[in-house]
Image (tube, rainbow over all chains, first blue to last red):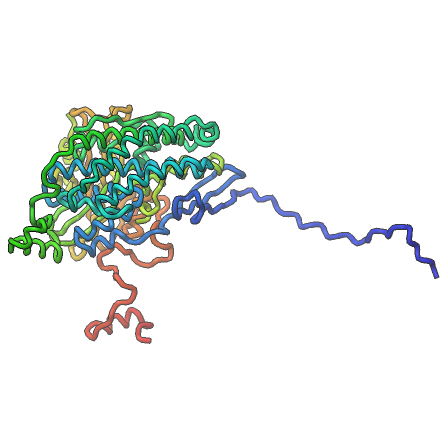
Length: 413
Length: 185
């Protein structure tokens, strides 16, 4: 019997492990799904990206997750009931969506809008633009990791939403603009509230700029990133800050004025770099211009009726119902049946925060629209995504989506 | 002085009987164009009349009237001053906007695609195909965009059922049961 050797370490086992199977080197792009649920997709946007290493070979936006068939729903509602659908499509610029729809319906009806209602529409539209741009600045910062700006931009946005609640009763979707004018006159607190926010905004915008404009990290992530040329931007039909960042001064408020925009003094900021930083700077400048327009509108706010006197379009004032049989008939006909625009078609476009918001309304002479089509700017702008990120790092995709600023409700409708 | 009326006159001069109608109802210049000349008309407008922006492409279903569909394209001409960065165009050379309508019969819903002329038509035409069932010949990537890819039917057509299950009454139950044999169970 051999004594047990306690001092020599045991020999290692001689069996060898099988070598791991060699993986073939695949020389084809990797497919990566970004979204639909991802913090940087602004809702539910799925981008199917094909990558060569870190570089983007193709980026195909897959949309439709929020599709609710708004265009079809329009066909089953009277024109006034359709007012509830238009703003719900783009929840960051409800006033502009309502305005485009109302302008198209008014064109079909051939109704005159009182001056007071037009000026109030301008004030609300510019506040709406500022509120939308504030979300852009805040969320763009959040997407790129500069999470302070959003705290401050939402502070001012909240004040604007309070004004919307004041006039229309709802923060996000005030159904305040109606065919023929407005749903009611302004509350007495309106002017003070608007003056207050307009006074605060210039200093507040300086504050956002202190956080971002000269921030080294912010510039690293945006300067020269997501570049698009003027020819590409125009061919892809983009609008607003994307087109104007490439040097094309396309602003419907100047070249096809509505609501009397030709009477206001303001500039259309234009830059030529075509990158994400230029788009950010443009929107900062646009907010300052909007403050100017809103101030001018507030200073010239005329007195007078807030809605057209055409009883076939707008309901009579409440007090008439007690004394006038005709008023009761008009009221009854309007709320049961609605008005009937003559057969025809109208396209009305407004300069929404994201570009041209167009409404194409076809009437067959009945109380419900035959067809309503929305040319929503986010939907069109999204096509520019691939051009912006092609051949660039995949991390720039986040910057590109953020600076396109799509509202997915507006894309999918 | 450039105007939409001059563009409409030029269209009639160039395409003659392919322009079925040209008018400006409600102040919106509109040309009704025969289907076979659609892309040539838009190319002419782009190359020779300065229409450099395609705003929108969509379609309308005039159900029970033939031709049943109208494909509608909205074009705009941005003057050179705007392309150079000046937002206010001069009165001599304003922003011009034109609407092109193309009648499409119900049994042959194919029109030429505008993607070779304007890349922006890509999403618009995919949406029109998806919801209205108009096929665009020459489109590089014609597939559904808003509806699920396995969806059947075109929801914006006027004869698309609004509810999932058609309600069977005694007068039409045979017709509906023939279409949906499982409905009887």
